[in-house]
Every structure is written in structure tokens, then in C-alpha cells.
Image (cartoon, rainbow, N blue to C red; front, top):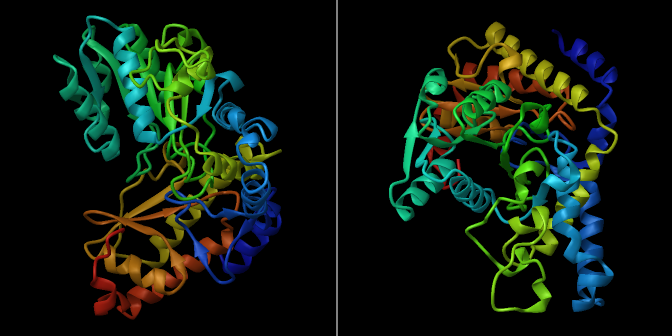
Length: 407
């Protein structure tokens, strides 16, 4: 595809107008929305209102007058529409790590007598770390890891919970959510899906797949801002049985009755713990308006096409790179992963040119394609910059080989 063909494709893109909903610096090619989404224009004004009017003037009254208390359920309902869940099956709260702990512990309680949690090696580290910590706190609990091709066989009657990330953070490879959930159910286990690299970029159908539990973050493709609140999903059929290990006051049936003994709230409210992050949830709620009226099928189609174009152009113009993601876009999330022994300085050289991707050790260059604001011409131009970085060996400069704290 020529650059002009990429521009023509942008003009025909049904999502083209969505880019105007985001604050994007002229000349910057942002391909890191899989780590931190761009700033939606709606967020700044909404946050200013929340700070100046609701906090500044309304003060504590705004828990009622601005319905701060309803933010977790209200934001959760918006996210539910993007992940194939009912509005009353999702709550926005806490971080992905905290929600993983809550849901994994709750799943173990729903499967008494079973002590095994099954995941895969190379899963996102916080998922594995949380499960390792949970196993240390609960006597007899075992974290078992199996390669993707061995997961079906590893699911047996000892497994209480299968926990996987739907789109792999490093390779972008997708698990078959429906098939693995069905297999877990065959042996009486529950399935918990981490949607951090899926929600807002892929068509996700939790209820269609029969998923039991899910978590995800708000700051990647959902564009909620750095450290944005996460979300949790509990299928309606499990909500009455679910017990959280973190029985904080906001999960109480009557938090303002101030009783000594805990009683779980109704539905998803029981998954809450501490006081909601009002400003974080307010920003996330405003950010999610960028999805209003968007068909997830259109989003996914563009995601696949952007990734395919990037891979085709790299294969044609940039020899010397390995491909760490599935070549078949149906098996790939909304990112492309290349490999190169000098991956880190190459990414830094690209960033200096205004092409922002990121690096994952030991040798992976990641490029994320957020379909709401990434254009086809951005992909063409990004590969042109990559061609120049390699041809001129810019990555050899000392400044690009100094490893920063965040890669």
C-alpha cells in the first residue's frame, strides 16, 4: 500500500471522525494505547467541573447531589456494553491487581475442596504475582501453569479456577475464550478472564462465552488516564454466592448504617471495598463517551486491518525483524509485536522521531493500534520512520541505549 492509498483508506474509514475526540499532538504517531490511552477531549472539561463545582463548592454534599456514590455502578454499566455483559454485572473499582485477588479468592470459596488455580507461564506478571500471593496465604492452594496448547489437558477435577489473559500482553495472541471456558465448566471449574488488553479494542462477549468472572483496567484502550480505576465482572448467576475476601464498608449492604458486622451488598455492590476514587471514575466515565454509537465490529475490523498493514509494510521494507505476534489477525489482539536483539534502543530512536511504541524484555517491540484514533497513514508513516532508524543506524546512539525506569 502506498502512502496515498493509506490516506484514501482513512477518508473511507467509518471511525475517522472519532480521532477528533482526542487530544493528540500534531506530528505525533501514538502507537502505545495498549499501555496508556490518549486523552479524550471530554475528560478535561468534566474533571474541571468535578473539581471546581462538585468538590470545590458542593463538597461532601456531592456524594448525593452529583451522585458520586453511584459512579462505580454507572461506569461499570458503560464498560459492560463493550464487553458483552449486562449493566448490572460490572462494577468499576480498585485496580486490576486488587480485583484479581478478590475474584480469585471468591472463586476458590465457590469451589470448596478444590485447591488448584490454573494459568499459563508468561501471563501478565501481576496476574501470576497475585495468584502466588494468594497461594501463600491459603494453605494447600496450588498455582499450576500449563502452556497454551496444554491447557485443555491440564483442566481436571482438582482445578477450581482457570485464570487467563484474553489477549497476551507481550505477543497479542488471543485465547479462545468460549472453548476454554466450556472446557473449564466440563470439569466443574470456574473461568476468570483478564480483559486488560481486550476491552475497548476487540469484540468481547463474556456472556456469549459463558464466562464466570472477569477483570480489566481502565487506562489502556478505555482511555481513562494513568492509574484509572479497573473493573470487575461477576456473571449474574454467581453474584448471590460470591464472597469477597476484602469486606470493606462500600461492599456492605448498608454502608451508612455503620454496623459492626459485615453483610454483603446486593449484586455487584458486594465486589466493592473502599471509598471510590471519585476523580478517577469521573475521568473514566467521560472517556467512555468516545465509544458512544460505535459498533464493536467496526472497531475490531479496523484493529485487524491496521495490524495487517503494519506487518505487511515491515515485511516488505524492514528485513531483520522477527514477528512475535500471530500473523493471522483473527488470532491477534490490537497490537503487533516485533523482535530484534536491539529492540530497546530502536524503540527509543522511534520515540525521538515522534513514533511512540514501547519495549518488553528481552527483545519485543510493541505497537498498539487503538482504532478510535490511530489512522492508516499513521501506520505507513511509522514504518517509514522505522526504515530510516535502521538505515541510518540511529539506534546506536548512546542516548538511546540508556535504559529508563519505565520501558
